[in-house]
Image (cartoon, rainbow over all chains, first blue to last red; front, side):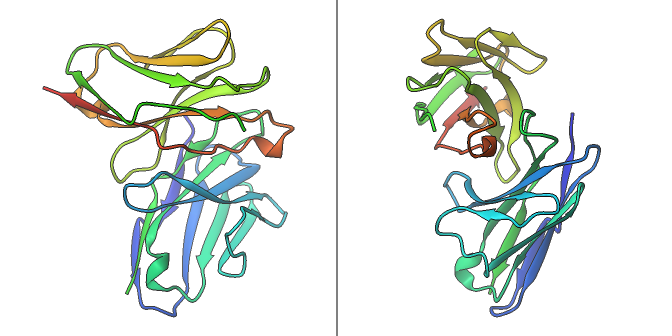
Length: 115
Length: 113
């Protein structure tokens, strides 16, 4: 099966700092990557979709200047949470797929805690 | 997007079959039914998907009704490690908004000894 990794698995940062989360497709080239956020006891919420070499498309209500997404290659996408605040503390999960007709695979998630 | 309805929670005895229902009465003809599960504090894991025909793989079987308005995921011999939240998702056709996966609330399956 397809493997998607994320780094770091968990991060603690101070309020006002920026945090970068990496998402990699290890054994396939991902034309599209997705970023989700999940709060405790809630379902996953899609934040944005990124296609390699293009600007990300953000879901309604997600601030693009707050959550910077870069999909620079077919195996790497990054999510940067800028000027993080305690309310940004959450579980961030990426997923990737080869093409629009193929299955989407998920990373293990990154737990962010902003103090 | 077609909406899905799943029971909030279910219990299953270890070793027995777990049958998880999903209602998707507004599904369109070119939309797939996908099942994922999420074990606590992990990313979702792909299980199986189908369009019209029943499907089986090493993890589970997917039974889709003839009218495609509902489906059932079957874990034939549930183990304690199958305890997770199971999500039934109708995936939009690829030409419509890129085929994103939108998660509902899912079914919390508890497998008990």
